[in-house]
Image 1 (cartoon, rainbow, N blue to C red):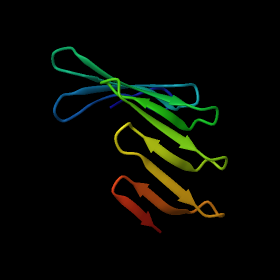
Image 2: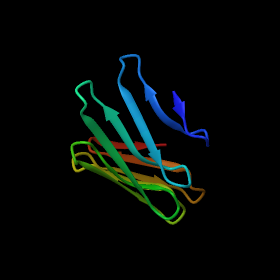
Image 3: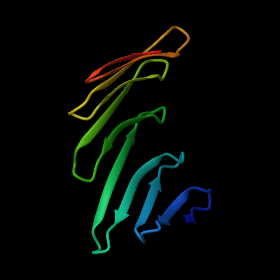
Image 4: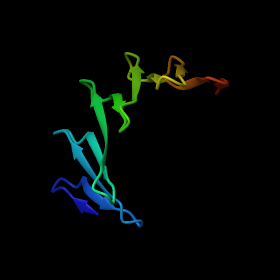
Length: 108
């Protein structure tokens, strides 16, 4: 592992020899992950955040996008990847009460 001076991981090399590098914003939030292939190829995943630092969009190396939505309290409301939508419900104390997936609903 190689670290930035602020303690965040700059890059790592896995047991398989694959190198992965990370880039962050000034608040330490992950902006980009780059995976390097043996052939010199790069697979880049990008992360977009809102003013509160919450992840709102992840763009995968194949250009597919995953969107995240939150309520006013900052609770995750939904995750949408174009295939399987996830939705979440919370009680007045902001405790997770239900998770809706394509195949059904889990209640807590």
